[in-house]
Image (cartoon, rainbow, N blue to C red; front, side, top):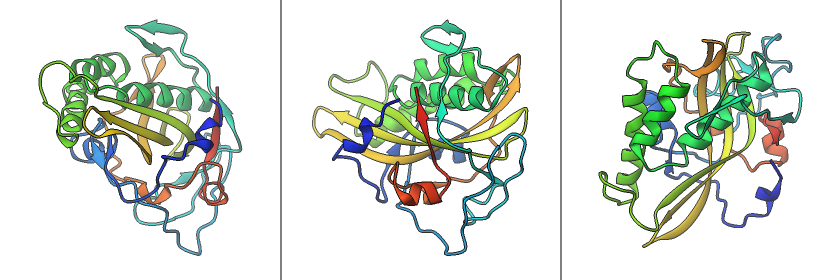
Length: 249
């Protein structure tokens, strides 16, 4: 993934409605809905957490919303592609940190870039933990909530001229072990409607993953943290201090 995002003048870091991440993550599990992605407010005592997240336990508390066993990557990560394309979604990732982050990027990019609840349910059937039996139903609520917040009809075909697009640009980890990880993605989120045009904002998008059925799967969420206080301009000194690292493709 290139660093062209650094040149996008429309990106804003402010209290905003990010149509996509945390409302369903907190209220009804993981989904595409709306939540605040406020600009960073960091305690002076904060220090970047430890590196090598799957083998080293990082432990620095930034705030009540972001203190969940912080584990920072050691540097930029080059994404890998899943080894199988099913219904437009790549699955089949390596059992590694790179595999977990790559899966999170693929899953969130797809979930955050659709206004079609049936598509979100399909993604869930392919990417969610098989034991999370109502995952497809929960994830399908995301596009419905997104449409509502954008002032669009919540049923039927996606209205003409309406779209959403999620583009992860940096990452960090929480609560990581060999078989589980919460991947945080710092992402540009663009919404477009025929009446309002396009607007791009910055948000933090968390995703809990577990290793099961020989792949990284979306877990039935138990972490209610929004991590919104970690929002920072990608590539900035603040982002680096907060533990963000670049994603490369």
